[in-house]
Amino acid sequence: MQSTQQLLFICSQNRWRSLTAERLFDGHAHYVARSAGTEPGARVRVTAGHLGWADVVFVMERKHADILRQKYGSELAGKAVVTLRIPDKFQFLDHVLVELLRERLREHLPLL
Image 1 (cartoon, rainbow, N blue to C red):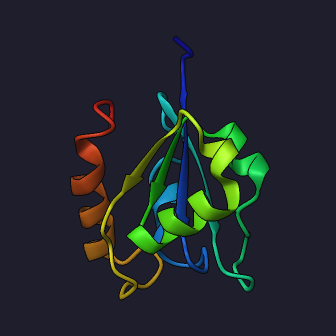
Image 2: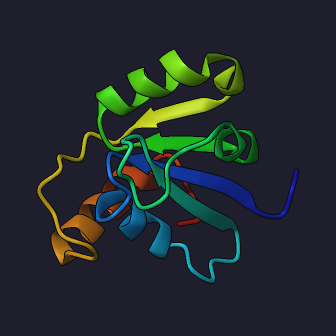
């Protein structure tokens, strides 16, 4: 098993939710994270390369998983895609968002 697990966080614009999730793992010993968005105006727009890099893909809403499966079905084959059910109502690094992310990720990432 590799020493670090590669996590990809996806939301719509890659400005608040997925970017906050990525920041939670800055300097983490066991996880390395990147983030991207599904929308054309996203800060960083998700690509096949992002999905190929990731061991696990976390999406904020089911619509994000649907978009990824529709556009990148072959790149997602065999990868875990986890829907966190976090609505688009938080700002970047909002303390409520950070706690919600930690709570929802805990069951999937035991070394968090």
